[in-house]
Length: 473
Image (cartoon, rainbow, N blue to C red):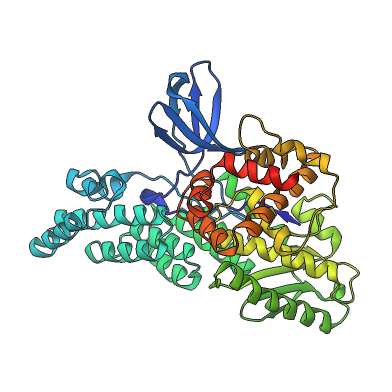
């Protein structure tokens, strides 16, 4: 019942919707804090950490170091943004172009004016200004979770700068956000021959093939990327994927349109078991599609492993009976029929997939695990003292304490699971599915957990703590 965090897809290259790596806040006392989503509001700086949202007085901060370099994504992570030089579109520094998205708002009138000037003069400078303006609009829209309109803006940019490799690479990344894998692969084709962008293009191509469970093509693409440029992170990922591919060399495969199921024939006693698993998954899919108002475009990959192979590949402890890391992975050794426990594990991991897709990977672990247990009807059977202290009235949010507990010892992790279930159960019983859907949508648009709670449930973090604490009593 594990969930390994998978990173959301960002715009590649100059259109980064999010930084490629965490930023670092350097305090005047020398302490360094790894953080994401840094926002300055008045005399305080707000930021996200692995334990939740935190704020600091500006008077304590020496400087903020913005993340740079290329992200280390590969097997189980969605590709984040990369920051390459803006020289690819020099007009990005033009004052009028920058005004198109000034203050986080899109000036449609100025955007139209730049496009008219490009059409009328037909000079390269005017065309590049129009293309750069549309590129900035695409970044703004992608950051708000609007991948469809971001893709439209990039296609308009390409009308003024045909076959521009940076724009094509960004368009492919946005199409991945939309789960349009086939279209993204086509968009990438011209970029593969460009020396400056070939590494990123092959790396993204390999990631798409990996998500499609086309392992040979994924490995070939990543080898091509490494032939262009050495990258220790990608080399490590490639080695892991090669191990995974070898483990699944003799796997049988079945597909339903919604799922791609792969399994070792020797571990699935009869073809009926594979068919039963696929039928159960299809039924669960219908329920989850209704619960989250979402229909994934691409098939969800489900991998069934011998027990030893599962734990060896995933590194999960033996208490874990399933994992979602972009693919659903479940150990099934010795099973001859679809048992209720196996069905429950499959449902739990399928919820992870839907929550991830609905929130664009921005749901924190307490929400992921809470909803997975809620929909799988896995009410935790643990003593209250295992999780009650997380909700005791004190400084800070209980959500931050729950998130931190997932990184603790076995007892703390059990408490974190139980606490996550209690929060999700309280929200679902008191407010319902519609408000939860609004929260996931707010997260997909880049809002923080606190902002999404306020927008969806009209609750502050303190209000939520109080409601859950009341439910405990």
